[in-house]
Length: 387
Image (cartoon, rainbow, N blue to C red; front, top):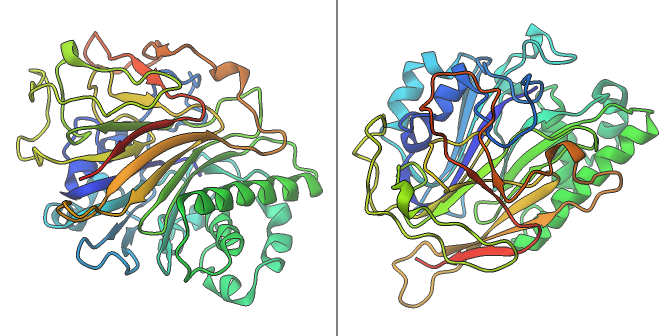
């Protein structure tokens, strides 16, 4: 399936701060997606505009961080679910996974694929996982893939999606799911999962490219990938926002900052809370919120703040334990690294320049002047924040 998703990690915020309140929130993306400046996908083949075949939320408790995520999934459209709208206005979390799903019109899908068991995110013990994309030839390799799983992970599977099976493969690569991993150990396991999937495809003669935009967390660290194993095609879009204040807040274009490629930089300072006159953002957003947001599409049009993750790279959000003077909760270190997988390299159609112009094929009624997005650096630390 082709979907849209958002990940947030930082100081606790209401879930509505990413699902409903921004002008291009995840709920808005579910009914009118395709805002993908800088991506070469003019016909929305890998970035479907309507994602109404269900939604899911997974969030972690600020007071019980070692517990598994709370999960809420439903097969109705996100824009038409009263329970969703009510819950997100009352629940705060420091770590949120949110997903909207598109099944109809996707290759190899049918209406029987729409069920709660097939709805993202997926949760197992401390781990939460979701996927935007598809594994080509999955029906050919499914039996072999399942046979490779240990009994506990085989029994974990309740749905029929390629995504949940990828999650099982990842957990198998992790091994001891009760052990606390480092950020790099989690990233390495994600890379091994992708290697295993692409090798199975080769074994079964699958030549069609797959979109492998994954997000996984163990409740501490986050790894998200933007990946497609076809060098002639760009992967689905994926952006990140990392600033002093919440990524859900508009800022002044005159004070937008740029993260220089290849160097470590502090997050850009907030521009004093200036809000564009056309903004539909709610004034109730947490003014002092600090965090990182990773999203299939930018949630706002805040100039210079949203960056496109490079093709066939992963973004790693590493948990930093709180220092002696910290108010609690720890901080974050954010880095980008290439995905080292055979036959996966940057597609020629998505190289771009450091500054990426808005997508000229986006014909919706947005303001005339769109922000320019900043391409992330190839494999360098971006910033470290300690709360």
